[in-house]
Length: 104
Length: 104
DNA sequence: ACCTCGTATCAAGATTATTTGATATGATAT
DNA sequence: ATATCATATCAAATAATCTTGATACGAGGT
View 1: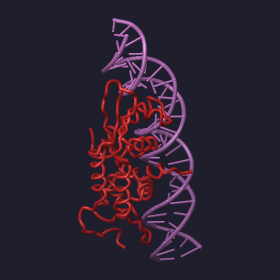
View 2 (view 1 turned 60 degrees about the vertical axis):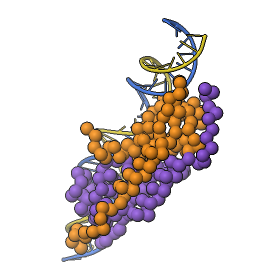
View 3 (view 1 turned 180 degrees about the horizontal axis):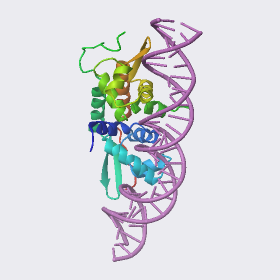
View 4 (view 1 turned 180 degrees about the vertical axis):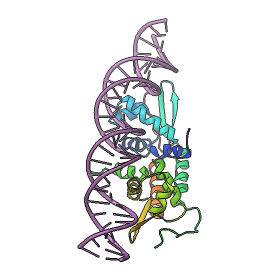
């Protein structure tokens, strides 16, 4: 079973690890293949694979196979969705405030 | 020592836990005191305190003391900052793509 | 001063994430 | 088919996060 919360958490997990923020920083410079990421980051091959999976599943990054190599880039669509979602999660429903609590 | 990455991670931690998303959802309905959150959520007092600390430190939520009670609400400023940061972290530096990698 | 109530902190345990090396899979080339 | 290279998956160890109950702190009220 998958709640809507879990779906949302998945999106923001992308930004909740230093290594992944470093990867995103590199991808801001344009599409990169895994080999480039590997040599720029202090990380092993299986570790990179682990983090890339999380990034792709968040929707923030998309991957493209080209022969043996995998190329990664930031997904504009996924990023826009994350931005929209963040806005949604932090915008009040209505302006009707109710202050009926813990009888002051 | 605190890297800029750690600072950024702190912001998005707010959205990386189901309980915290539930709390934010409640706060979207307007400012709430801890007592209200406690009765709406399946969580104990110390657990609420734990999560509220993370939310406040992320900047997404701000707290206000009123006598013995603490009131929480979504911070518009903090939310805007998070949105701006997300945009920043996912926007390419320039449009100059370099494809000089793993000689195809 | 004391008592009460709301909140924060601590410590222990449980759960989840991350790292690492080994192995498996999948595509390409010979 | 085999060999090679890039990537994915697995399993075990470690680290980080979350939960829970007990205790400490702080503000009001008596």
